[in-house]
Amino acid sequence: MKKIYLLAILLISFASFGQEAKSEKKEVKTCEVEEGFKEPERDKKTKKWAKRMNRFNEGAFPSLEDIKKHVAIDNDCEESEVTLTRLSEQAGNGIYVYCVRGKQLKYKRMGTVIMIEGENPFKNN
Image 1: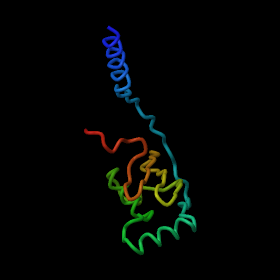
Image 2: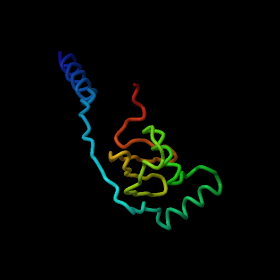
Image 3: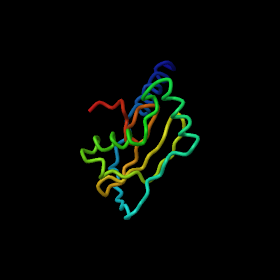
């Protein structure tokens, strides 16, 4: 009898932890880019790391222009409509905040993979 209770408790706990969280609607933030706004650049340490990585393996460290092209293609717009407002980078990853057609979008980079922040890359559509 104890085994049955233990098995029931285990099954219930596995079922409750295995439930996928309900997706909440994301709040779309708006943004405006002022006239004469200058996009941020990489710091010296990250530039040095990118140069070192690309010396051995071309394309191993995407440039800010490459990421901007990816964002433009992702949102079906021209590169001129995409503006980098903030960035936070390290050698292996980075977070980029873009203003695309008046909407604020946050992208992240893990190695050479670039995706929208908070999106599951393994999710089946």
